[in-house]
Figure 1 (cartoon, one colour):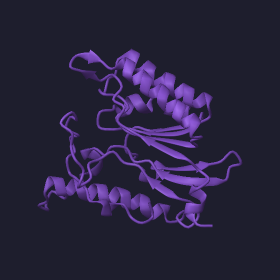
Figure 2: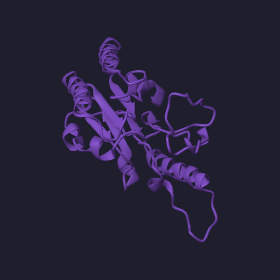
Figure 3: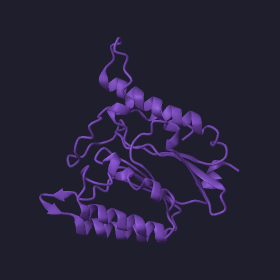
Figure 4: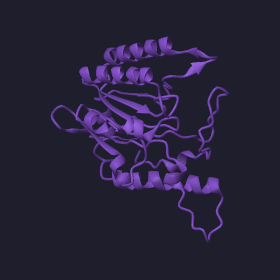
Length: 224
């Protein structure tokens, strides 16, 4: 059976950039955020979604207020209650420590959190199985890659900073791609990311992502 045939039996919903706690012209968006999360949960239930992917910028600031953390944890608890398998990765607005703090506990409840790049990159690969333990899909859950994760510049070699970052991104995904080749003829392999891609438009409302080195789609191999 082809990977696409497996995918036909699984519904995946992708979302990102919630920015919980964001203010718009000094006005709180808490009510709108709660409405969105209610809608999202209803959609997950209505569409019978099996896997929820959340690709970064959960919060608007690195140190979110307690009320904003409460919004996040209440939603995650609702996902757990409904048995929705979930993968959450960090964005450039998120604190790695804040997201990772409850990750060990959440992992036992079907919610995988990868706040920042793993020292062992292969640990970013998440296997998704059904209730019988049969592998359904594999996700390369890559969070926002910070300069420290990417820059491996030889001090004796002249290299443009942005080019070094692009190369670091390419190498990061290549390592994951090489590892995931063992799955590609069995189940779909999905790559997550929180980054700029060439050809995308940048909204005036979005703050600088910091790492502005736009990448080409060719860093994502056919494995994904």
